[in-house]
Image 1 (cartoon, helix red, strand yellow):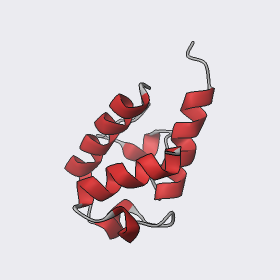
Image 2: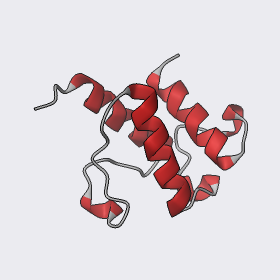
Image 3: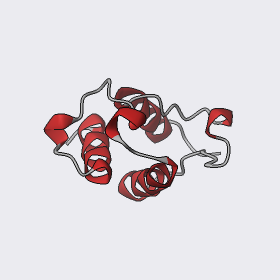
Length: 86
């Protein structure tokens, strides 16, 4: 399963949708995922991929972790997976 497929499955589960109902261009808002749901998504991503997501739930715009769409989240996760931790 690819990163995009895993992210799609995580977001679909949080939004109570089928993965087929989630596209790469879907936004969290369009999926009905609120700020509390986003926190759950971030925790699930961290557990699934064994990474630390640099995300501040109190100030999402201050993060380099792009949450604008399914594709952007997958791209950010792929970057974290290929970037060695300091």
